Length: 173
Image 1 (cartoon, helix red, strand yellow):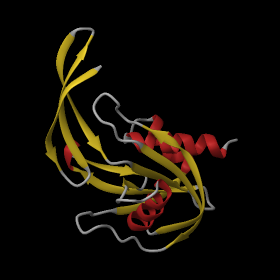
Image 2 (cartoon, helix red, strand yellow; image 1 turned 120 degrees about the vertical axis):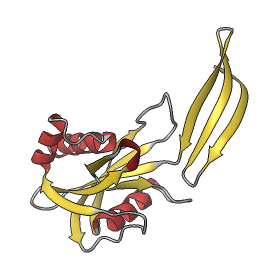
Image 3 (tube, helix red, strand yellow; image 1 turned 90 degrees about the horizontal axis):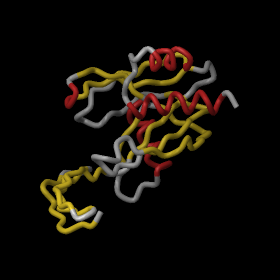
Image 4 (cartoon, rainbow, N blue to C red; image 1 turned 30 degrees about the vertical axis):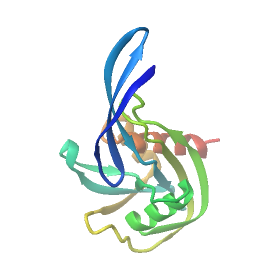
């Protein structure tokens, strides 16, 4: 692709909407996409092999979802710093042991966001402190039950699906 023009259509705190004119093989077309700040997802597993899930309403899809703790990076945060902050804010959990589970892009055709996954272990559980615009519920369930819900299509958030399956694979090594 050759970029012929680049136009910012709209900008918010974590996201920018662009429309570019591009050429490929002599064909010109508009290409719209979203530039989204990087984010993290955390699979936190306690000594009983239970994972913490956070429940919240997801406005764009009009559904209540159970997901692993996750969120956008603040300016200057490393992925690990972001993961530690999100786990504490959303689930009230701190971890002594952190293992990277890889980085993923959920939809490279529409956005450029990179999602970093971590396994958190050796946990200290406290009280969550969500942001003022979040209403979060916290739930613990056995990892194998959570994976069963993934396989049944009941847990459908992409980062949660990848995170739970990667954590299970890592722990079985």
